[in-house]
View 1: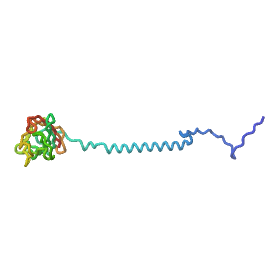
View 2: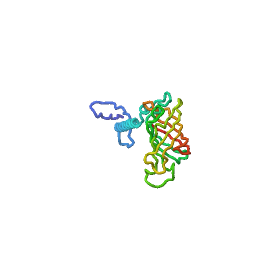
View 3: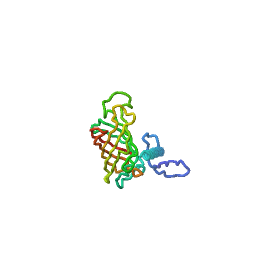
View 4: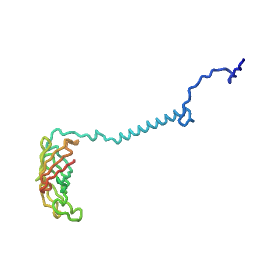
Length: 214
C-alpha cells in the first residue's frame, strides 16, 4: 500500500527539531520571557531596597571616631578642670540638690552654684516654686580639692546662701566629700565624669552621693 507523503508548507522540505518546552508562569498565560522579565524586575527591586536599607543603617549608626575619647595618662588635680554639672542626693533620697562648679585644675575652684530642695532644712510649705529651694554660691577661697594618682580624692566645699536667702535656708555650710574620677577624658585631657560620696550632705547629719558630668 502506498502512503501519501504530507506536502511541505514551504518550497523546500525541512526537518523540524523539537523546541524546549516553554515554562509557564504561575498564572499559566505568560511565556517564559515575560516570566523572566518579571523575576528580574523583582530582583532589581530587592537589590534597591537592600541598598537603601544599607544607606539608612549607615546614616543612623553612631560615628565611633567622633565619640571615642582618650584615657587619663596620669591622675592629678589638673585633669579635674572646667565646668561640671552634678546631681546629689542623700542615701535615703530625702535630700536632693544640683551643683554647678568649676575646678581650676590646681586644687581650687573658680566658681560654683548649688540649689537644694528646701525640705532638706525645714518642713515643706506650699508656695511659689522659687521659695521651695535654697540657692548657694561657692566660696572659692574656703574651698579646695585634691586628686591622687589613682584617681580618687577629697573635696571641701564651702557654700554661702544667696542674698536675700530663702526663709528656712541655712546661711552657710561646708560639704566634705570623697571623689573618684572616671578614666575618660575629652579632647583637652580633662576627665568627663566623676562620682562622689558626701559625709555630711548639705551640711546635715546625713550621708549622700552623686555624680558629675562635664
